[in-house]
Length: 502
Image 1: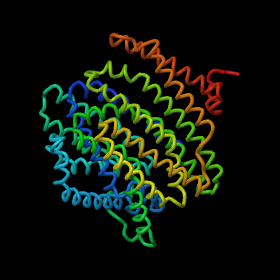
Image 2 (image 1 turned 90 degrees about the vertical axis):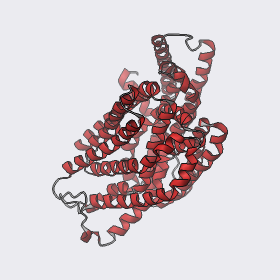
Image 3 (image 1 turned 180 degrees about the horizontal axis):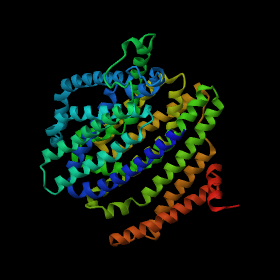
Image 4 (image 1 turned 135 degrees about the vertical axis):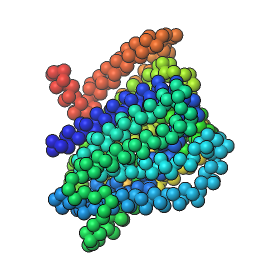
């Protein structure tokens, strides 16, 4: 348990440190040194790589986690790491064939609206390969209970290396071609660092390429392959937002993709608490599902959903009331202020996903996990259809709305299935109270801007001070409403303990 706690704490530190570095890079480096089109180029390259690599992985990362206990025999792992490596290699080979077959139509789709991307489109397979094995080796380290270093490499190391590339290009020390190669190379460096670390902590009997084929009898290989293929499909559910930048780049160009990228980073902050809270809740839910304690599953699901909604909702409100101040202080902020409504719409989508994803976990942990394929198909199909319909009409706001609509359809169907088939409902009065409190704060923000104003023409220091005062006021009002309305006994207990309230 000590190892789990230490690794969880270190992983959380890596996440938040990565967010801090990402905030600085996104708002004070990219907006100063790169054009909107160049920002869009980097975003499309990495989003394409992450999306394609998640499919090429063929579910090997998830299979490592599920089947590692069956392969581990003392200090011997019977080549499961090599099996995951080869399975991912087969997935990449399949991706490469498909990429070559469709490279012409893809280039044609981007050449008119995003000619800069067409110039560097040939780098997509390379960065996809790097991203693929970053994920595989990170999963390998996680089953050895050594996830903190790979997380630090991904969240901090890659961002710092990219920061160097941005500055070298921004200062005019390297050309755009060299910059793009450095940007892609950062993921290659991360792949090598994760590989070296995995070899180091693997211990005796570790083989990154060797496979103990004699151990794969008794249906082990078939079970692992079936599970991997299922996970390869369901992994799309977590990568739906990546489709937006690809659609925007093809339909309206890289410049607006750059604006969308900056706005999306702001909205993504809403999900940061979910990464930690979700990791804590899944093992507890898994134990209850395994033992058939569905009453406890429903209670845990409601509690997790409530607190995810409470935390993510409050973060969303605090971001939205300060969005104008943010665009006022970043370099060239006026060029990106048009993405304010993207922040709002995507923020709502992130709140929905954060608070209801426990339903996805419950279904995935039940004996009906194969039904996930249907819901992933609905989510993916909805994202494609909504993006195709809304982006030409609404631009980047349409891309954000497409994500919100796709998640809405997905979660409505998923929650109905959980209620009817598993007898689990995630809804409670507490959630309705949270929605009312957050809605009240948003309406109050409208009144604040109308009566008090936004601070007028101020210096950067004045804007930050004004924003800080507003944040404190809204935070106290929000917490006061949650406490006074008794939304969560857990929160009220923590408040009483911290402030010794009777």
